[in-house]
Picture 1: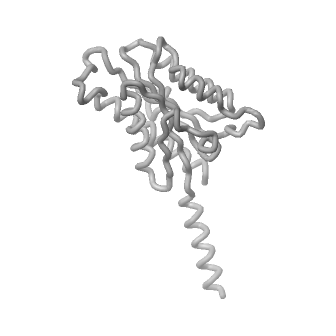
Picture 2: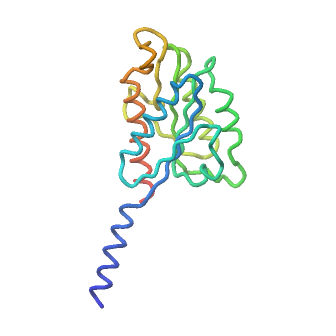
Length: 190
């Protein structure tokens, strides 16, 4: 009998230490650049054990996914120093009554044509909206990406060939953001 209780106690401790956390990565992409960043964020988050990551375009995202997620990472192209109209409409549709997104983690990533084209402003706009919903925002892992992750796609020296449109260092920033959000989400769920 004592062996059964001891086994159950060990199982309970093991199960608690491997608590599953859910991360939703939602993005809008017109040229494929933001999609590439979204895949990098997805890879980074998926590299952490005990995390279930869902990758959705903004057109395929559903309210049930938002409510199920422990963390929501939103990606947008930069349009005249603003989020795309699709991301704006998506975030404006989030449920507000009763604060169902309160205390969920939130993070942002963007792609911009050039340096100083508004990438940090757009990241901050996404994070600001998340704060309005009572979310806890997460930036990148170091000072080089304090607001999340961003990529420059058309300005030299970052404009690459058509087959490789995002420089590897920006994709790595996306992976690092996804991994950081996953690690923090796991710590918060335990």
